[in-house]
Amino acid sequence: QVQLVQSGAEVKKPGASVKVSCKASGSTFTSTNYGISWVRQAPGQGLEWMGWIIVYNGNTNYAQKFQGRVTMTTDTSTSTAYMEVGSLRSDDTAVYFCARVVVEGAAPVRADFWGQGTLVTVSS
Amino acid sequence: QTVVTQEPSLTVSPGGTVTLTCASSTGAVTRGYYPNWIQQKPGQTPRPLIYSTSYKHSWTPARFSGSLLGGKAALTLSGVQPEDEAEYYCLLYYGGAPVFGGGTKLTVL
Image (cartoon, rainbow over all chains, first blue to last red; front, top):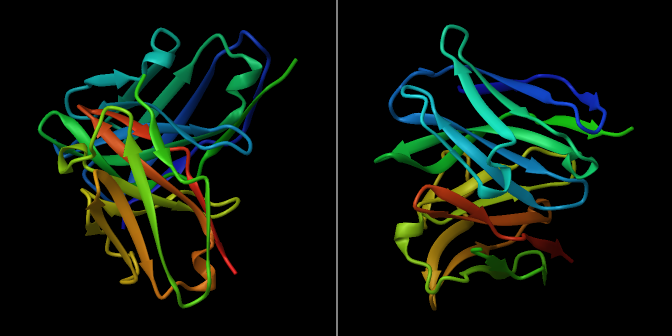
């Protein structure tokens, strides 16, 4: 069974950066078939896709809204994906989820297993 | 900016049938958008139910089915159970850039 375990809650000040981790187990992390997507959910709001990274080649695709402010990386030696968000604002307060995505062709077409979520609170 | 539209809320009686839909601002939804449906209950992690229009994950109950209907993606629940009360999100893939719908809050009453 695939498991994605995310790092714990964070509290950050406006302007700071946060880096959330997502450790995978139970599947071949570097398989050409998989990637990691990051999705966030602000309090009481819907789901918002932020971007994805294809693990075996490092290709990324960020939502236009987050380009320049988000960086997604992986460490294949530890089967861990990371997402860093810079220049945090109060409206970045949200639960951030990672999800394993299945890749067909050069892009993901579905997410199957999800992490438990990481609450990031941005407050002065 | 692409917008994916779902019904904000629906109500269904236990044992009944309900269909949720998902429309794209770019036009008709086709299989090429790989429609996904995801269930989320309050305080819980999102749980994928349907992918590629109509395929079920191994954990998806048989009463859930996906289809294309009138230019939209559709999720049908047949024989609704009280535990199906949740928020349901549609997800469409636009050339590798996924867009979520706003979600449908399904009430079982």
